[in-house]
Length: 337
Image (spheres, rainbow, N blue to C red):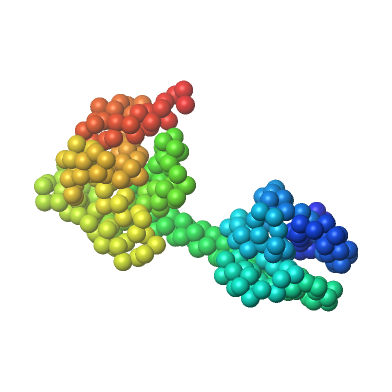
């Protein structure tokens, strides 16, 4: 840890916000904690909320109960929404059981103190509140780290799995990774949101997982497939769905696996979906998938140039592909882009 980050950590550890409409009380609290905590002061609930929005979150927020306008319970309830990680403490001169119950139920306070409060009691409570804050933060950091680790492992695992599937045939080596890269770039052009980007990435890597059940003789056949062989090839969609369906983490990618051979005019397979019945991530994947197939060599034909591939996609727009997605893709791969 460098000097600046260590200083920041120490400052955060010691920071407390006192909110009270009586200046003398605030001055007394400031003097009381001086040297042990870094205190920030607010003379109203509104000023306190302003400070939290501007300078927060504060590890500990201490509020008076009776203040003009918004009382302490209302204030701490808002703090809970704005900065839920902050430890909230009520300090009041009214030992009113009703107020205490409101503070606990609505403000979810950590502790309820009544004035006059001894220096030892306030310092001990602040230290406990600070410890609670850091315990919560540590748990949040562990959870975020765990999620990141799982996500990274997941992407690595999916990439390895995609490579294993594509390796069944020398003609498809690297296909799923290239399609995933193209689909993500196209999704960015179409301004797809963050969560859907993740779904597109995973779904693109897994879209051909069902080919694990397709015989290599069919994948590598140098001539046109017979109708019976075409049925076997098309089965990879249903096989892929059956493989992934029982796994909760892959539920969001099922539409991409199930729909990447649906056609915009409804003449695709397996369900004959048309237009917007096909999920947008699947419509994006279909264009990227077909582009890579068209530009790549296959046992029965040579690949074409990227510009010719875009022409073919454009010719099939509104029939096989979503016209808006094709237009965006054309702009993405044009020489000017």
